[in-house]
Length: 488
Image 1 (cartoon, rainbow, N blue to C red):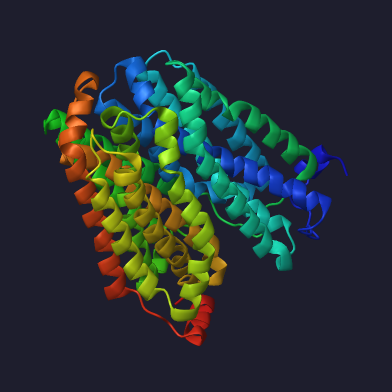
Image 2 (image 1 turned 45 degrees about the vertical axis):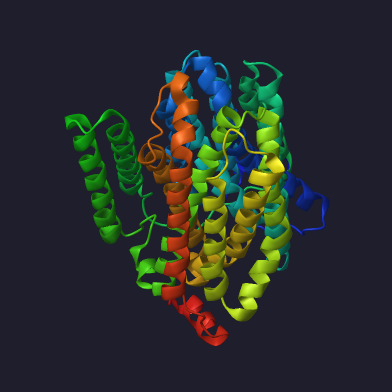
């Protein structure tokens, strides 16, 4: 059957693809490259921010929006994208999102001013919301049941390499010349072309033939408007002062979030089933996720700026300095997941954020006279160890607390909560620490505010550990299996 015919025949039942077959390797290549493209972009941009700010003479508020415009649309649309794939065809939506992401990336590279760049970043987030969950959904739908775990493991491990090399690629590209930060966005275009080519030729189409009801458009719109209103209001209010516009926008955003909850409670096919939150384990795991990823997002936004603007590292050196975190995660995350399975998630989810908090507070000592080996590497290693203890048990606990038939939506909710935590931290943390300066004064503002920002991030992360100690339970395997099947 021709590739185009496979893409049209979205209702045909799939016999299943084997992991070790040639087609299985092609499917893995398409999904890993697609999701890896979005991970690469996120880590590249953080390292490129100082050069972008210098090009456009942008202050802290503009840098915040370069990051948050992407996260905002990604978080607002992540939950509904899975429903689109189930109904319209997972491969088709995955390819559409890939093309969208590539076009928006080209728009970022060609942006003549910071306003256009922020708008293009928001459009990038739309594409990212279609690509990221779509890649995992394709694996679940295409591979035979016995091979899905291996496929997901390969997707997770190899996709994580993109996040690992992102700071290095971003540093190398942006260091060539003041304008070459634009290459950090253009690199997505050839990757996207390869993803589309492989998907069209080798990925069989699939959709959920039993999907019923309308897509939850009202919920998606309210979620996006709520996040946008709250983020805009908090960012502007903290930096420009709390005038009528800032107060009104924040209140309107909070009202939209409230309306979203009401709509989801009444919707017959909600994109975020509120019944999941009746499980104390699920609710607690997601609250811990919110706190830990808020600390992570705030730190990863400010640390590259501090390393380059204050400590004076080159973009490449700044990107390389974060590599130990990713290496530790790749080496230890799977082991920590297996450990949590044996002893229960409560201890690693309690200790991990506390260890990470120590690393964050220690990072606050990084200053103009610091050396990499003496002041940067030790807290980076401690922080990485804390994350490795935390992330795999945290994700596994959130998924295990949901019924197996809702594992996909539980994963999407947990991912969305993590994005929202990062979104709010990037909006709130810099002004909370007094880092609100224009471009020419940014280094001085960072010197004063960075230590306080890291203390605040450390306190947030530690709060996640305390919450886990109080609320997460080590359920017996039989009880967990029963709740997983019955819905908790």
